[in-house]
Image 1 (cartoon, one colour):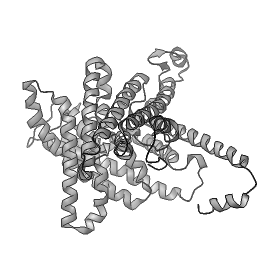
Image 2 (cartoon, chains in turn yellow, green):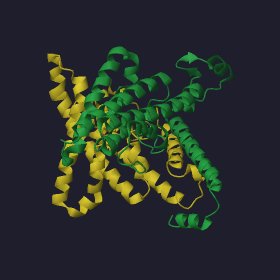
Image 3 (spheres, chains in turn yellow, orange):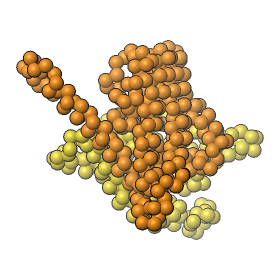
Length: 212
Length: 230
């Protein structure tokens, strides 16, 4: 356990810790292939490379920001409330989902105002993100791992990046798959799940390399 | 949801969700948790209980409120309703199943964003009377549960050689080193679920193929015309 005593910010070794968090969130604990989060959009939006990249970018952006926001709110607002016998453990679910939904709504409006090009590239994926369990999952796992401030930001970025890598890889494979013959009953979700299984086997290799 | 007419009676709604529109095998929804908790049957059973409770109760609640919720904030309201019921599940599990709760805590919280819960609220209980919505939600939960238990059974028996923790084949497996470790690990979940989906679709195709020649051959031209637009 490298992070048993996490060095606080501005201490030597903090950058290395951040790197460990990033690599482990992206690869060893890939949120999609080892934690199975965000499977629904993974199966439905991975038909084309272009939309997979768009969805991936939107997820990276939203996880990064919401993880940071949620960490700040949890450690500075909910955690002190525990002293007054308020069940922070249960309230955090409501807090996180409200933060995520509000953030996504806000982003959608902002992007629509600022850049119409970006809106058409990312905007259509934003409403789908509120119900993407990878986002809420990243926040929950982050709290389990006891990450604060900048570490939480990096964890969120890594989790989103891991999800994006997985969906982009899958979209690439599925585009090629159009030209191959798949048994009729296995078409669609069936073959996608099998490919995901093989990809998950590849990611199992990373297990144990770095432990957060 | 495709294939579900707007108005369904409670009984019909339940049965449709159980097999014809089964959330896991047909719509491939809500499988995040389906994959994550299925390496042990007991965990799966708890998770299914939580999900059945959350889907039925939130469907009922949304259906009761459906005329007062403005369209723009609908998703927000649905998520909050789901969150309330999931927190109840979380507290109950924490109190009575402390050991298991540690393993599946994050996934219990994630029932909030489970596509089945939100999907049923969005597609059905926002437009239908309370009783039908309750049945629809319950049916979706049950449909999810029996698919999940099937996956969990395969994974636990092949991976650990136990059934609900009871050593069924364990001695034999250890003696012959026949445990399938991959069944416990993440890839196993994908493979077992894929095979299940495959099986269900295969049964469908078989049935469709068995039905097709049985139709009266009196009007083959008419049938061909029907198929043509596909």
